[in-house]
Length: 168
Length: 168
DNA sequence: CTTGGAATGTCAATAACACTGACGTATTGT
DNA sequence: ACAATACGTCAGTGTTATTGACATTCCAAG
Image (cartoon, rainbow over all chains, first blue to last red; front, side, top):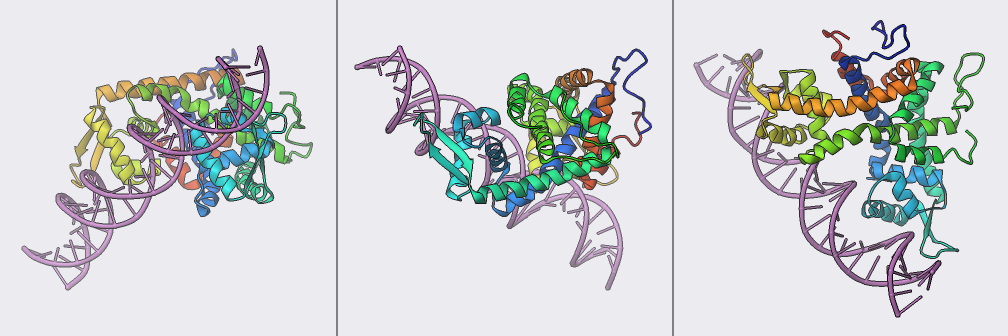
């Protein structure tokens, strides 16, 4: 507030080193806040962020395959497998052999898993909703625009894929 | 682009579960992009993100103490110490015993450290600058507003402290 | 001045979680 | 048959976090 604007009359952006550093730090501190609430809930069951991410994207694409989830999360299958194993054992995730292709395993959430995912999602959504309210309607659009521009093109495909056949 | 606006005529925000989920996913994918470039540079020296964070905030507050850095980064002093030890050994960070209080160690970057930190910072700044350009001037303000509203109040103090006596 | 507590920083051991590499199994398709 | 795909697992390694213990320094109460 009250700082110099990052643009000039020509509409071009003139960004000082300082402004960019503040942006970097904003990402750092905001991401900490962004994960703080779910982290607390996860810790109760001695889960980590990896479990949260898996649950989130399985909820997002029910029936997805292991390979698909792998490329979305960008981790190795060994890492994902360790997480999935515990989630399946704990009865949060369902692992069903494919009908057409029996090599594939289709992942979905059980009732318990769905409920737990909602808890995590709500905790994170609450903070985001509060931030949106505080920043105002115009800020929300800008927030999303910058974040989308910051993604790797390869990752952005995954991000956009969730909007394909769904109402937004 | 082309999706429904998250506000209505009254100016209040009406956010669907779907919109909030997209926001959550935007943060997830964007943060991956945000760290991708520095991660590559760090890997060359077999450093991790912890080294980057330490270098960044030492650059930001030259002469800072270990305890101060500790509360900014939000890790245990043992974790920070391992990182600092390698950085000091590698000649990137200077560790000087305090004059007034000899318990304290004042941290600063060596010439090499400053140069390396610049490399990391530039890689990250380049992507952020590109994202800003792509999203436009108005978006930048919104981006920062939402991120700042998302921080924990305790962490936000640290974030703001860097603007105190400095030109912004 | 001495002594005890608080602050600061360091060392050691351990755990969580990621990675790479290699291998095994079942299935699919040519 | 043969190769490729999808999934799972074992072993080894590395980063980063944790807790516990300890040394040093400062400061203030006795």
